[in-house]
Length: 117
Image 1 (cartoon, rainbow, N blue to C red):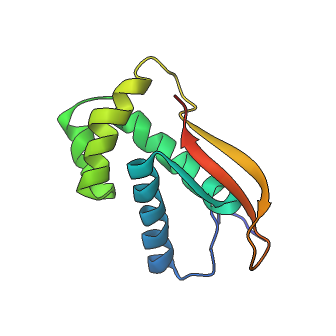
Image 2 (cartoon, one colour):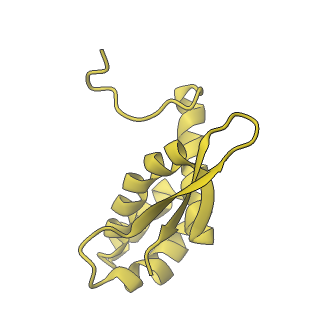
């Protein structure tokens, strides 16, 4: 049974998985739109939305929390550029669009994840 065990494992151990997910989030914040597998997109979406909500507070404490959870470049971009765009929005900052193309080697379903403009 999978009680109290949420999240996807991605075939990695816990430390590797945390680094992998934080790297995905960093790439997504820096590029604002990435093409990845559906499972990866679904995994990072709630985490990115919580980070955007935190960045929308626009206080020094939230900036410090962002810098502790993300690399400094992506934390600054999220705080200074991305979060002010969503100041009047109540939630739903990220969109996942499923594509018809599957990855060639393992036929994994692909999708595009992007910030809503």
